Image (cartoon, rainbow, N blue to C red; front, side, top):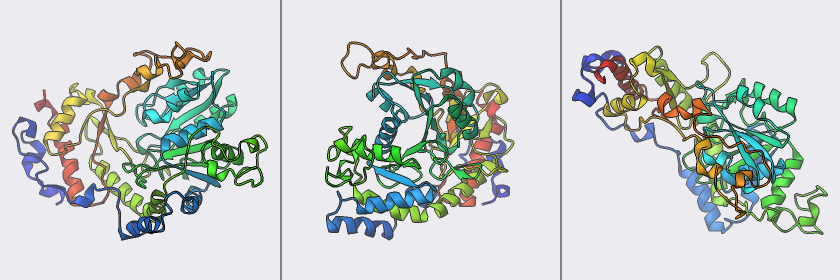
Length: 439
């Protein structure tokens, strides 16, 4: 189906929300949206682990971590049961502790930063850029204080952060950078994969992510000190005994061999590691098709009033990776001030059922970061260890707080099927072109 074959009603007739004909009337083929792609190769790899009874061993997991490190062009990697624990271990390895601060964008999932509270630290939230939805480098500098240890950057919805500016700020002020790559497996910033700029990168690999292994996480770094600290913190079976060094050589860690220094068990189930090895072998090819499909969608909507692509420039060597949690940018002032919510309802009525406004909620407004007392100390953990009080109320981070008005979900295509992608683009084009009907 080419654009020229669309019925005229789809371009200028009544909107479906007002009784007009829907743009999308047929169910899409399963492969257009189904993810992850699981084949016989995945099934056999997992079954081999089950048949061997080696779910809690580490040899397959180590091989997966080594392959993942090589794919990212980093020297060291550790697999985790989830991304949350990978990020917690990274923070501890970078010496985040009681009374310290980290800086993190408010617009992210809670698992990018809440772990800092469990270490006795606090979170100083920064705002985001309205076009990339990533942390605003200009909002970082004034937040750095004497106890700031780490800047957490989140490559949000696949879009790479402005790593040149961020790394320059970090070096100037002597703070570390932790990249949360959970949204952006395979995304590139100026020709290099995200996760290769900061001191450590950590990420989720749960079933909904663009790189999905069932459930799991990964940490990558080039720093052997951070690597060994992370092993000691939660990979107790790899620390050895006093007679056997295992993977630990740092003198500061040798007294603690054989026991998890953090009290955590960070071993990944090898069924997931086995699936991860298979997924990695095919990910570049599958990611390329996702990028082709998503760019096709946005190319069809180029110049449509009120909506903008959330993507890197087509003329740059930065990319969106697997395009996880695909978003569009809404500019209601170009559509007579119609709200993002009303726009999305009209698009949903055309058959795009998952078109919803917003993204994650702004974390700086959540009570967890204001009043939660995790250690039963009689005061909020955010200020319990002598930290500066960096808690922020509504009105302090305007871009993050307006996310419901400026961002919306778009279809996340897994296959480049032009006739179907054209039809989905037509639904957005129809609503934007007839926005006065919504009023």
